[in-house]
Image (tube, rainbow, N blue to C red; front, side, top):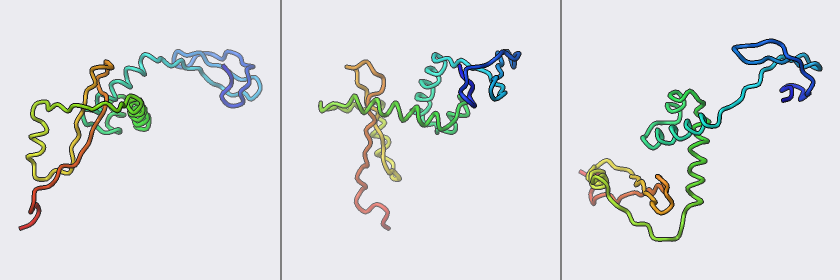
Length: 144
């Protein structure tokens, strides 16, 4: 571990701060601590962020709930989307209605678009692709 200010490896121990070892750089006299990041905790937070996003929460509210930056949440969700793009195939996808949700959404008059969450059971993934579409409006919609 090097000094974050001057990148020197010449340091001495300089007590404890909040239970963490503190160091002092011999060259620039900068005091610093080293924090070891846990990957298991961050993986569970990323998974929780994805679940919350799929439930409809926004990036900022997810960030407040998980006590992380909303930009970090955005980057996590974006990386999941990029991974899903790699899994796309030219195979025909079958769409299955669950709980008549599409029928319910299509019966609404003030609909702009809808999304269908597709599940790919062959690759053992819970979410594989999010297909979106815009339904055709009924003739005479919006006219008196």
